[in-house]
Image 1: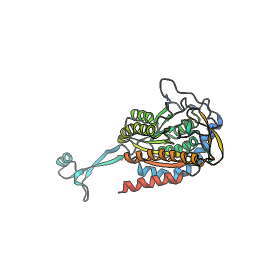
Image 2: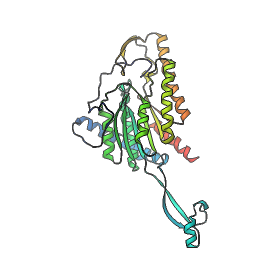
Image 3: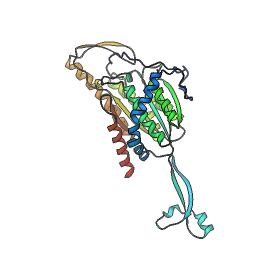
Length: 338
């Protein structure tokens, strides 16, 4: 939630089965029953629209920057000049009478978890599409890149509740189901509790994984003390999770959350609480205060990411996400090449 309130959104997502009150709804079947035809068509359009980027750019970049769980033994072969002496298998060498070395290969397969924020503030956009729609398309690119490299992909949808969890699996059909879920799922909560989502992810992932968090990362704090408390809560959880997993923050932003337009008195609604208020956007002081609060909140989260070594990719509803994602992959490639 922003430090100020949002314009009411007239659009709502098609209703999907809601979560049970005792925890997240866990999905295991690829069942199309009850899904509107237009939603299936939208999923297909997203796949077609993103396929070119996945095939030509992101798949190779994805493969080069994300490692598997480690190295696995492949074979023992005779020592050759230039081999690292540390790889000599002394037991085999003693039996055969001349040096042999162990050969290992990278265990490429890994798990990817898409952690998607569908709180009330995600159902907002002033530049052509809602943030939730942009999240669905970026999730599609990441998921299709992962399955193209034979990795498993899972989905965690959250608000101030753990709404929906699909365990990581392989395959194109599974990925299309995840995209559909992001598009149609209607959560029971409207607020945002990112720390709770990260804690859940850390508990359900048994092995090291790549966790992409797609969110606006709005803290919903009205003052500096409240903001600091939310950051501390998030930092405790993120520190634990990022120590074991590769966490990447995909920050989805909209221009209206950073600067109010000068359009006079505007009645707006908080999408996470439903509270309405009238704001005089014609006041320069009001606009300046709004921009200041938004900047402070954004900078607090960015400082947290830097402290913990979490990469942030900023995308915007009024711009292409291709450039920021490509820049992220290239940055990771440079880091691995050092």
